[in-house]
Image (cartoon, rainbow, N blue to C red; front, top):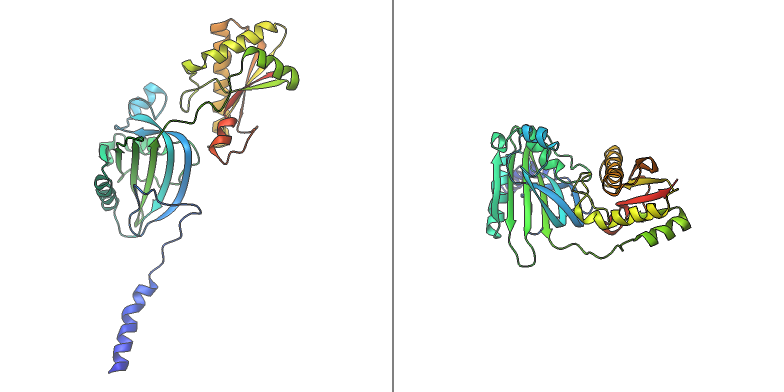
Length: 324
């Protein structure tokens, strides 16, 4: 009798032992404490930054808006949120639908004091492929490897109001075969640590160019993921114009530089557009002859610091004036 009971116990234990174990989390990956993970999921992509800006989708996304604005992620369908930022992609256990996973996340967020700003499912999200791409592309940097599951996607954007700064959480859940993939973006709003890069006036530009043939400038600021020069850039542009007027025989290269995040070709194109925008502004608004200015986009090819941390990436995002 005891032998029969032992055999029965072994038979019952075999299926559980044969169950495949979840794959380990990606190196360095960890849950955000305010969001957590669906039970049995594991982290396939993880990125954290001390300070970044995400465009978080807060309305349906339509192709017509993309055509009219020139960008899939725009002011009609998203809001910029800056602060300590995280992006995670989870792969869930087999047999769990995106709806079940999302509702569990919504329950967790609500219990933590979050309010839902926007939520949608499949066609409610607008043009479904445009919506999927907008959520994935709203954050610069390497792609998270999310499956293109726009036929059954679910999305939630929620906010937690805190005295020390709001927290925004965006969650996109899609089906891939028998599993659900979940993309989680979290931004803990807080002020950027400013005053870390000094203002360079015309005199300092003169000294730098005489000494090294070039000067790096950090006072020219652009819109997120664009070549639009922001109004705060005007003082630096004025100093460039003063420097060039004081050296009427000098021709220069206006070189745009990016950090190491994102695709190489994309960053080259972005830095080129930004260099062209600076040349256009100096020519149009300050009367500098266009023939003296050569725009050039270096992208990520000439870093001056490590791209492995936010401080280094900030130094790499710059415009340089190079003597020809």
